[in-house]
Image (cartoon, rainbow, N blue to C red):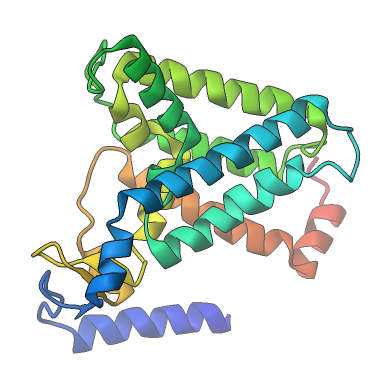
Length: 255
């Protein structure tokens, strides 16, 4: 109730006290030139992608060859590092998954080996964020509801299906699939709007308030259901950890 009251008070305060636009694209505290140079560095992105690729290979080896026991790190990687860690990293640093996504890197590498344009696509992409909404909803169900979701057999099927669908989507729709259809890129991009790091209208790196990033969000197909899944999943995760909710579920006559 306290959280609900705080939320309602915030909305009322904003609606009554903030009647004129106060967020401008030119706002922000410029970062020192050396820091901005590091953030723009090609080497920083290469190192980040290499580390992400090594972690991915290590995880896949553990998934395929590792023991199906509590010692196996795969469930922790999937449900903590990827899901929770990516959220915090994005809110701190911005849409990082777009930079280190190993499947995006694999797709780009295959196109480079085949010597074809990185913009190659068999069909134009017109689905917006709807695939991302479905993917995030599915992952939320897997994490919070599905039984035996930490067993290696379950995770092997889950990871294999995700890799296959991602590469199929990229093969048909090109890079647009990762930019809009990939659930984790959309998750990272939307949460990255809250990052204190951003670029102002002249392209310079600045420190800003989270509202500046959200102010730049523009409507697109599937945006509302994607945000609804993100908020609903987070709310359900909080409810499910509450003792009152657990008691209600265990005593309910509904199967």
